[in-house]
Length: 139
Image 1 (cartoon, helix red, strand yellow):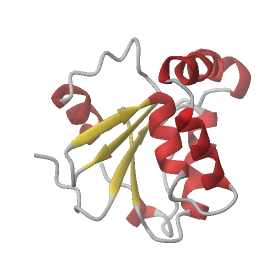
Image 2: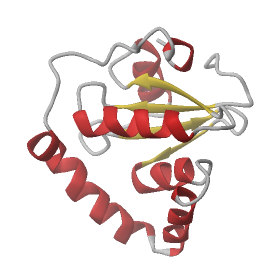
Image 3: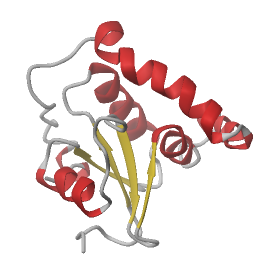
């Protein structure tokens, strides 16, 4: 289906969102076990995941976490917290919020996602990774 190594997970993000790009850099810096690969939602693989999992991009337009081992996709706050789980202390402490009902977590998440361009700005095009980070990104 998707050509992602089984020992990795793919984070799909809004490639023109400043908050999303900053979050990707935050994850890369703390991904000590080299667990994650990245791709913009706007990329070919991003579009493939959206199509395969029938994602409504009006409702979910910011972060997706694809796990090739289970062929599963997590979205919104669940995706963010499952990513945090792999980033070591203190970031991994955020997983305690998985105990909060999803509708409450996603309500907060949706407020941030809805306002992310207004609060953090937007780029004209997707981030181009530096040569050092290129191996973390797939198209």
